[in-house]
Image (cartoon, rainbow, N blue to C red):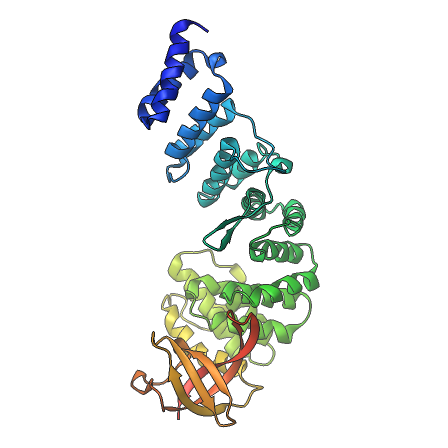
Length: 393
């Protein structure tokens, strides 16, 4: 190393200590291009941290992230933090941020390629703790990003295997998404009982429509049409956008075809109208059914069809349940939920969007009818019965 290079690298180090980051970076970039062999491990580490903090950590520009991560991975090797993660590794953090941002950009094949640059055996399994909250370990982050991409790429076997491995982590902070991917994979390989087991666990933590829809699919392919219909109805009666549930309308049509042929056709018409409205592909057999029924093949006002079907869905949802009666006994300060005191003296939690009456009657003392549905009490971590489909009487 010549004297000038030596002095310049020392200057870059001093600038970094003085928090003159731009000046330090400029020298490091210049001399990395000229003579990378002159960089000590300390220089490489210092330059890597400058790049990570400036262009990767909180950056949204994927091009800049990739460019800097490539430079870091050229300079540094992944450090083995499996036993000791006291000092962070810029190589590891850079690649993990790349995986995260590639997934956000739906570049799933690139995620798999970049993941190959990580040796998972070197990753720490220790979750971090900040203000009493647990944050995922680097190994959990790695599994999370890679399995997400693998599922999107339909690499079912590998996604299944790695998701199973993730559940064995010593300090796993969130098992929901790994179990979701396992359920999706299990459905793909025909292990419907296994899929249902994972999904029934997830539904106790998350009540999203797509989880209910996936359970409906699992039960359908497992030959349990009664449970399939129950979860499908629950899915369509959520407040999720209508267009996101087109496949559930089709499933309901298949399930009620024999007993309710007219309503089955209306469910298919709803799917057809949404697809037409959005300019999506329409299956030829679906088009034929709509034409043969003499329905308007140009109708894009799907919300009108949906409004008519909601009565039918609600009838199916509660057909085996007698309505309950009571009064609104409490509305919480935020106004979005409250409690109903039933005639038998029991108290049931409800959410405002389940109140179907006139909003002028949404107050304590109003007499109501309602039905019961399983809900999840996060505070007590248990299933309980909630009041739903609430009407004034």
